[in-house]
Length: 160
Image (cartoon, rainbow, N blue to C red; front, top):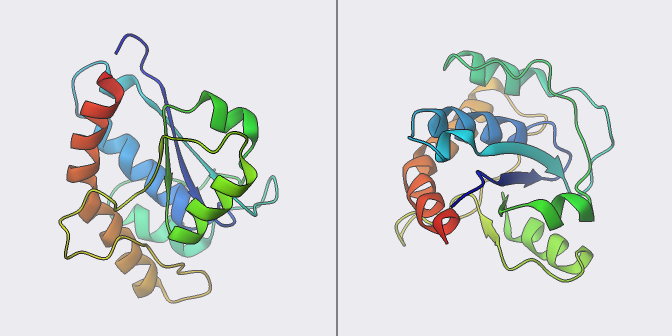
């Protein structure tokens, strides 16, 4: 891998899951050797409006693990972003389906954030929107659980 690349983490409105997942993944990759630590992680939403604030519970859930996403604002996923991405990670099968329908051509580098977990694990990350802080923390923990297998996949995928 000569250039670090861009990874896009995608959810619905880009105010809960994808900003949390992007920050957690960026933090994990920062501990890796180059070129992984220079991979740029961004987030977007398949049905996002530009400029919405991140949810307060997403901010709190990540603050509890030492990460600050308070300045994040939402952005819609665009064809340009898809074209430039080394890897696209959705939260659910419906995100994958929407991206495959909207993108031209459908991206071959599209996976779920938890896709590389052991077979028994749930591959989808549900939407905590409107839920309690405990629900957001549970969502964060599902993401954290996926990070080691995801980092291993990124090492091999981006090396190609």
